[in-house]
Image (cartoon, rainbow, N blue to C red; front, side):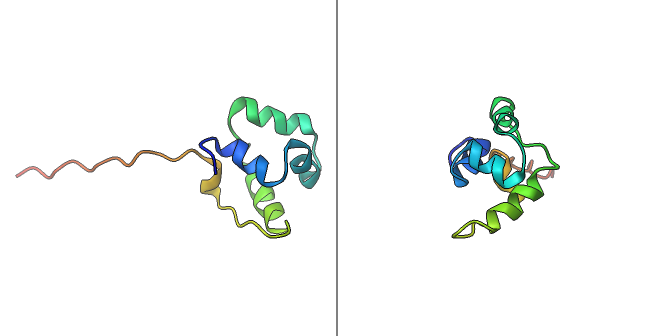
Length: 79
């Protein structure tokens, strides 16, 4: 997936129009997600399920909808 998780997820479906069709929503709604850089949390389970119905199936997880985070090192314990 690219560094932009929203764009990557949309691309798995073939584009905004195709994802919108899978979700019974408008292409404009999906376009809005590209503008905000996020998918509404209520839509994530619907998209995960729709991806499993693709041929071949794609197995997304909630982590696929968020940018990777840098690991934060734990502070050294004090003596």
